[in-house]
Length: 99
Image (cartoon, rainbow, N blue to C red; front, top):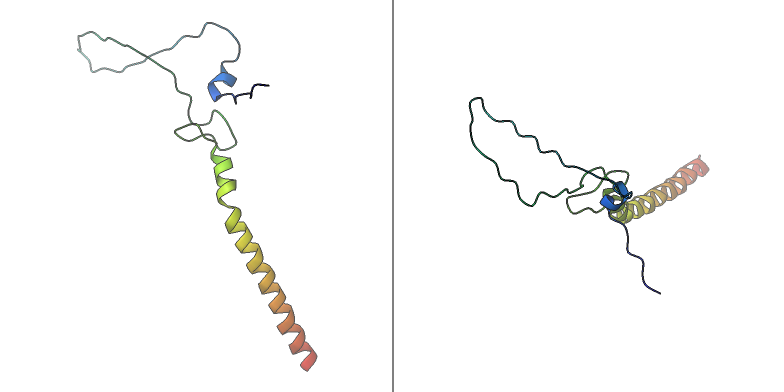
């Protein structure tokens, strides 16, 4: 069984076979005369084409990177919170018991 490849954002956007056209707009100073030769015009879909926070320059999902990178920070924060609450309960109850 062949492994299925993940679709790129461009495959999702342009999934239906249809005639698509590119538009190149250039703003030139008044009085400019000349010719332009455009070769190898390609379309790269970057930014908000996929995912909750969009994609980075190489097409990776930013939200997934954010969640993956924050795992250790969330773990440390939760452990510190539980330690603080536990110590606070012990100190508070011991002071209450002393009165």
